[in-house]
Image 1: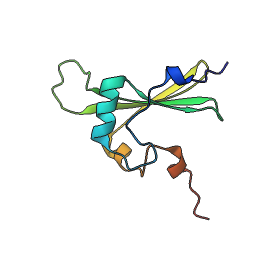
Image 2: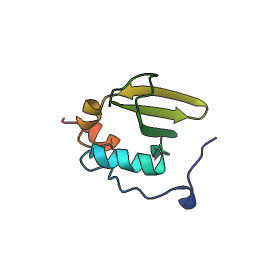
Image 3: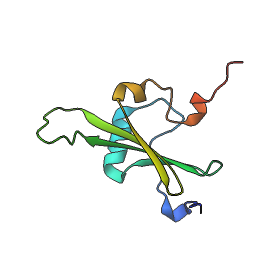
Length: 102
């Protein structure tokens, strides 16, 4: 079963997935509207990026917890990344990471 979002299910984002990563803008957009979700209908995969404050009890750090969840059907895989890792990419789009130099 594949869920293809209808136009009324989605909200245009101010984040440009093909442009340079603007962490502050991405964090603000997620805080206002929830996780940033890419839908890849060709591969039947959704990719969600979420940014939340550290949730460790008693922790007073100011680090954000950045999670990326890949889902397909009933299966999902989540991982945590650092701000440095997300900012090290040219963009949020898979297109930039799939370029071939040869």
